[in-house]
Length: 109
Length: 116
Image 1 (cartoon, one colour):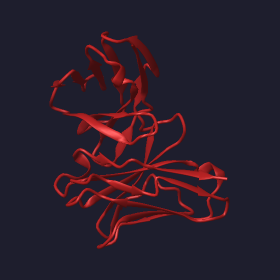
Image 2 (tube, helix red, strand yellow):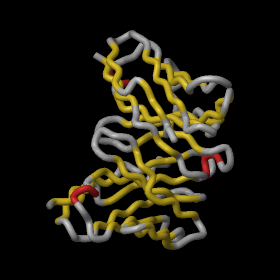
Image 3 (cartoon, rainbow over the protein chains, first blue to last red):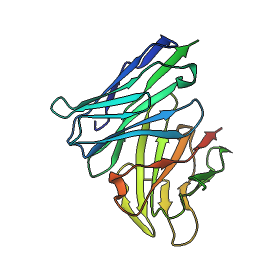
């Protein structure tokens, strides 16, 4: 399967804690992106990291990419209840765009 | 500054009917992608179109499904003779002319199709 894999499938943390989600893939990629999806809503783009980049930051988000291990991680620092959502990694291999199954994050107040 | 628009947001069809899902990309975007999301699952790529051309339909079921992106007007995903297994959320995304599939895709809110 070309789909990526994400772990954990579900993550529950307290407000203020950090949340780390991981994504692995099987093919060579051009870039990897992270999206957020609130329940019943469309996807929101968070970060794009290219294959020649190792780390990228955006606000409370930090994304790393290890092409040797074919994996990426998304770190959300100082989580808030509003961060509760599903988070998907997606990667482009030049042919099409493939999504992982997602991690469901619950941030408890 | 409208983003990707999809309509209808919710669509109910009986088995055997046709479903037409519309997607208006971000103004100026000429690349459109359709994805399907089954309940509790991730998104799956269906088809990638540029104006008047299908670039990649490798994720599209061979029968009953078709997509178009005419020179004028929205992109249409058409499902003929719907079955219960077609019940899903269908998301459209668009990206700018430059870069195509390599660039960020902007997603619409999705159309939730329910087949009774």
